[in-house]
Image (cartoon, rainbow, N blue to C red; front, side):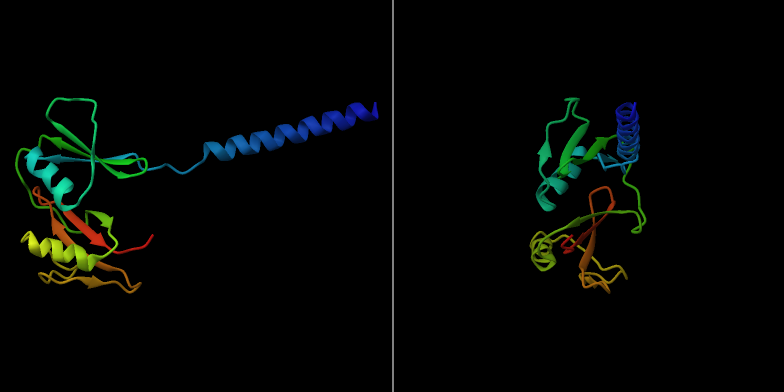
Length: 154
């Protein structure tokens, strides 16, 4: 009888541990899968993210000439979708951000390609040095979406 109570107690304890573990696994934070932006000229947008930002393209399942997928992280993508009726202005506060090893080297590349950039305050061809020491610049893609590039070491 005593052994049955011990076994029942162990089973109950194991069940509680399992339920707690299962509940914890159910409440895991979401992980970024992709960001999709609507673009006016897919070829120009693709060239910008592939050639200026140096982000690798990846196979996309539609094969309809209206999508480009780019790999922006181990399990994250940027989807460019042709469909914007025109190029419009966007607020700098809504931006994509990418980190590079050297903002200075990235600025040199932008200068070589004659691509304008600015700091957060709006000063052309200048960078911002955040209070945490991260250097950052802002530029716009062909659809005027803002892109921040910084040297955060994450």
